[in-house]
Length: 301
Ligand code: SAH
Image 1: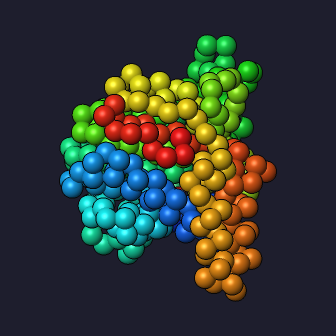
Image 2 (image 1 turned 90 degrees about the horizontal axis):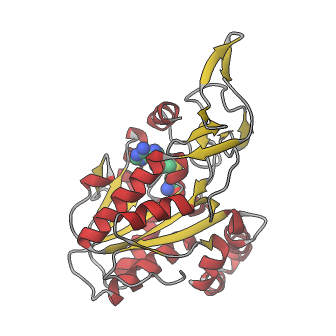
């Protein structure tokens, strides 16, 4: 999964209608704006430290960052943007939107200053391991193609995600700051096979065309929360994306956008529905914040 995704992201921009999948910031500017407002508010409540930077993990095309930073700058924050991104084509897309950003390969390389962190659909791309009756499920060659070496009731673990959450939490605990983690997944650890492949906006057979389709698995928020708490950070309860965006005032933002651009009202209404409705992204996607003990809990959580 790690090798396939490294190749997949290194060789394309998979986002958007012409790609493989669409993410929340690509649905509407309102998503990044709500995040920017929550981070700016948290930063002000923490005493507006002048050296705080915005940091995003896996920023895709830079759309979320550009919407969030616009709101944060309007609120008085004036720091730099730092991106943790390994994909050369996506770094290029991010640079087209935000040429002054600084790029890093890992979380550990982020600067040691207060951090305002966002990770949307980043953790789901990090690899999972699958276990059947305590034995790790592996991929083998059978009948000229790839096959799993065993089937049965599956339990997933993800040392890579726990490592990332721990690194993030250690940075925050040492330097101050808060992180918003948004992804699809479950609030509490549970057995089950959630590995999936997506190509051209459809599910695809998982072992077909390695490196040519997006491989993800649902995020176990309990596991990453525990890794973050063990590293010395405070972890909030899990909230669904729909509930969180509504608590942050997305309905009012949608009304304001529609009033200012009546010809866009239908587009805004559809986007709001897509981001918040329980049968769309509103319930499957979840949110937690991880923050340093001396910083406030971000709004909405
Ligand atoms: N956050 C964006 C993009 C989500 S796609 C959005 O919401 O639109 C996943 C992102 O994580 C891509 O930018 C991808 O290149 C990046 N990514 C995946 N694995 C990574 C890794 N191991 N290290 C750093 N970035 C990674």
